[in-house]
Image 1 (tube, rainbow, N blue to C red):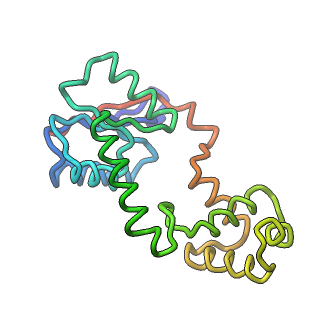
Image 2: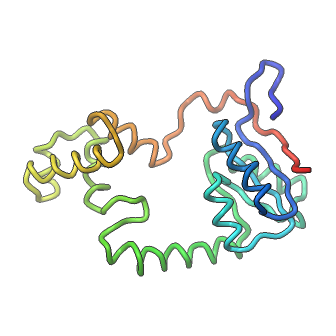
Image 3: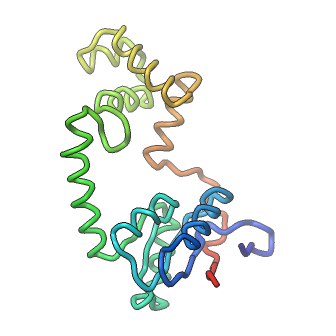
Length: 194
């Protein structure tokens, strides 16, 4: 992976492949595992299953090779560098349909939310992150203090978080708060699969 003159790694890596096959997934997993870069994938063709595989490997933006004009690539790289995602419109529509189906038919009936947390866990984590103590959270949500403590204990045990501060940090990371230093890295690097 290319670095700038100061040895600083890029913020966005662009990976160019013909198809999202096993070799491409290995490359994407290696980038995900060994860097903090966000990844833009340029591919000749991609279907829903390949999109899911790419997402599991940390891809934040997808561009079909036929749509990869210089202007479009600059736009997508900038979008991904800002912490946003990018998909071709047809894939985005199918992805949203699938997420809705998954939430409605699989997760919702089991009392789960797409984040992996029950809705009341999300509410409690948000109020902890907002600085409320246990009594205030219990009052706001209409639960006993013991229930709030049990919810926090369950989340912290499941996620191996040491204390409420860790829970706040986890919640902040999950809600996509970005560290300030990311803006000081070069915008992108190109990786072409051979």
